[in-house]
Amino acid sequence: MTADRGEPLFQKLKRPNVRYLFLAILIGVLAGYGAVLFKYVLKLMQWAFYQNSADFIQFADSVPLWMKFVVPTMGGLVVGIVVSNFASEAKGHGVPEVMQAIALRGGRIRKRVAAAKIFASAVTIGSGGSVGREGPMVQIGASIGSSVGQLFKTPSVHMKTMVGCGAAAGIAATFNAPIAGVLFALEIIIGDFGVMQFSPVVLSSVTATAISRYYFGDFPHFDIPAYSIVSLWEYLLYPLLGVVTGLVALSFTKILYWFEDGFDAIPIPEWIKPAIGGALLGGVFAVFPQVFGVGYGSMNLALVNQMEFQLLFVLIFVKILASSITLGSGGSGGIFAPSLFLGCMAGGVFGFGAHALFPAHTALPGAYALVAMGGVVAGTTYAPITAILIIFEMTSDYSIILPLMLTCITATVMNSTIDRASIYTTKLLRRGIDIEAGRERHLLSHMMVKEVMVSDVVTIPQAMPLSRIIWTFKTENAPYLHVVNGDGRLTGIISFRDIRTVLREEGLDQLLIAQDLATQDLVTVTMDDTLQDALDRMTARGVSQVPVLSSGKEGKLVGTLTESAVNAAYNSAIVRHEIAHDD
Image (cartoon, rainbow, N blue to C red; front, side, top):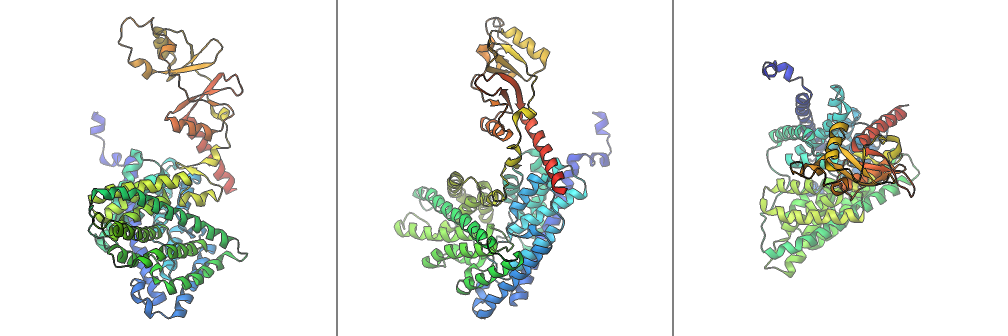
């Protein structure tokens, strides 16, 4: 104790956990300034293409028709050349590439990705690409976090936290939503809510938000209407709104990847495809300028009830088309803003219908548009907590929480039941990468339980009395005792927790036997099961260790498998995968 009190400050700062907190702050600073730079570059690109950096719907009528076709075509050509020759990771919406880097490359992302993503996304959006700037900032921030981690030689076990810090900082600085940034990183990127991950991610998110607010002020992107529940009967409508937004989100995901398949099938060089997409996109926003770029101006009109029902309805389909063309052809940008746009329009349509049917008991359409923005985000990303907090932080109004929760959870549960993959993991599945909880399922599916199980297990007979069970725990130093019958078949498991309640009871030493104390509702695996199957069963039951039985009808106890052994096997497989990839 004395030695610790007298330890010099610089020695304390060398401790690993403290060092990671300082790295998190550094990542927050760099990602925060990356977000500032990205916003300025984005405005610069739009001004370079159109000599105007305002929202496109404000000056669309002054842009010649030929320019609406030529400019996005030129932008697509530039993006195609950059992506093909500089960094292929800059193509698309970026988040799947970050998830893949964490699952398969230990969180290592090439340093050039941040610069390439800033430029490619700025050109795409500035020339008219119907995508968002939030997804790119996730990848830019994650690339910064990975680069800092590599520069300071962060161990691979902590590298994904550094990447998560960058992703959180990117979302926080872009949306002015530090809590949502934290939850996005933990819910989607890292897949872990542990304390060791939480603290650095929070620091990074707060730091980036402070920098963003210094340059752009503390205000939301949208003209948020005053939100209130007109009647308690409205709560019955929000689960229905969740179904509607879920269907819109599902349609967006399916159509987006249908367009991607279509462009992939065209037998021409990859760098030309974004230019073709740009030309098609020009035809779309020549008629509907509302879908140009990020589309915040159009969303603001819908939120304050200044957009007609017919236009709201049509823009749902037009936005899906425009965003699918942009991303499917190889443009660079995010799906967050398109999801918000689709939710805003779909919610507005729903609100018009609800208000027409129940005018005395429902709010104006803008209120439903606001809630539905979170519903479509949740329905595409399968990240309801992030969706709820983003909209909540935009409004700072607690009264919106319950409608948001009903809508977002309904959309997420419905869509995840229909299709296990989100809009992010669908892209990885198409590459043969099945990620779940930060792991690539494919690797564990090719390893068998018998390769990593421990054969040395402690067994006791069913008739062993409590006194001998306690003695066995003391002498064997085993966390579990496996209870077997006379044929050597497993009938139950006893942990120290099972006997704790009877330790102080007198006179039970010889009365209670193993069969009385054992947990008999067991989850087991066989030697020939895959590690992925075993991990699925362990996760479903919430256990960290399972007995291993021999294959066939006998099913005798042959060993035990622990979650730590599965993790070690997975990490070894990752190393082998990386070595093979490098070769």
